Image (cartoon, rainbow, N blue to C red; front, side, top):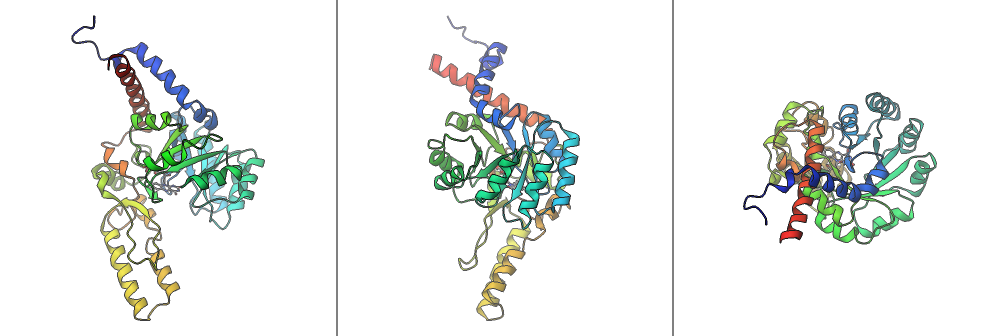
Amino acid sequence: MTAPHAADPTTDPARRAEARSRLDRLCARGTRFLGSEYALLAGAMSWVSERNLVSAISNAGGFGVLACGAMEPERLAEEIAATQALTSRPFGVNLITMHPRLDDLVRVCLDAGVSHVVLAGGIPSGPVIRAIKEGGAKAIGFAPALVLAKRLIRLGIDALVIEGSEAGGHVGPVSLTVLAQEILPHIHDVPVFVAGGLGRGDAILSYLELGASGAQLGTRFAASRESIAHERFKKAFLRANARDAVTSVQLDERFPVIPVRGLSNAGTRRFLEHQAETLRRFQAGELTKEAAQLDIEHFWAGSLRRAVIEGDVENGSVMAGQSVGMITSEQPVSEIINELVDQAIDALIRQEERARHG
Ligand SMILES: Cc1cc2nc3c(=O)[nH]c(=O)nc-3n(C[C@H](O)[C@H](O)[C@H](O)COP(=O)(O)O)c2cc1C
């Protein structure tokens, strides 16, 4: 007979150990692919994902990814070496496909023995993927739709990230809930990692059960203790709710704006005014269409650095995902990872309880 006040099953060490091995089995493909203890990638974040954060994540059993951003090859080589000095665990390097020296950056990664190269910012070419693989590393790409996932697999990609519009930074139009349903049931050839809006381990578990091999998080790690982001940047994350992390607004379809999710501030409001003024000048014949488009694109130049490094969270670009609302304190990376794993284990035990007792 069950005691009227039975002990909380999530506190039973045997139940936890059992659930942990179930979780490990669900993540096995992801951890094998990454070579890490947990199938948790910390997505690359320009200015944020540097040697300290990346090594801290890999040392805590996750998989850190360096953000190359606009770095030149020499600077990237330096950052990779500095990261390798801080961790002996595997980590990846995120390269933006439209970087003018992409081939040189790939060479730098291969020469340094980087095990995984993440190609972001567009569909990478077959030759780049081939160069990475022939150099002994694994190539990871982003699939914003099923057809593109299939195309990347044909090009030889080793793993995919599907990132929903809930994410921080540059985003596509489709939420992770929908992307996961569109892609996970149909892609079995390579591991697929889910990203966007993930702040809790039980939510990650639900995607593992749908067939994901692991998850990628950015926002939660940006506000971690080891993140070098400015104090004011982290404070802005602690204050923000999910609804504060909005995508950039495009005023006129003739002048496309790449959607970026971040905290609304004076900068995002001024961006609207800037677009309106640029439009007015275009309509008055003061600017050509090309000049007007460039003017709009240049508005945010250097603004992520301004927010992350200089701490100007009013005028800079405070890129953040909707999961920002789940951040309540500046936690060490290891604590964040342990919390995510514990939440997944709790959820597995509760699931089993429901199956047993209804
Ligand atoms: C401040 C910030 C900067 C980012 N910069 C990059 C980047 O340079 N390259 C990239 O591929 N993704 C970038 N991202 C996206 C992250 O790698 C990751 O995929 C995303 O944050 C996951 O969603 P989440 O924010 O909901 O956890 C950035 C995200 C944030 C919050």
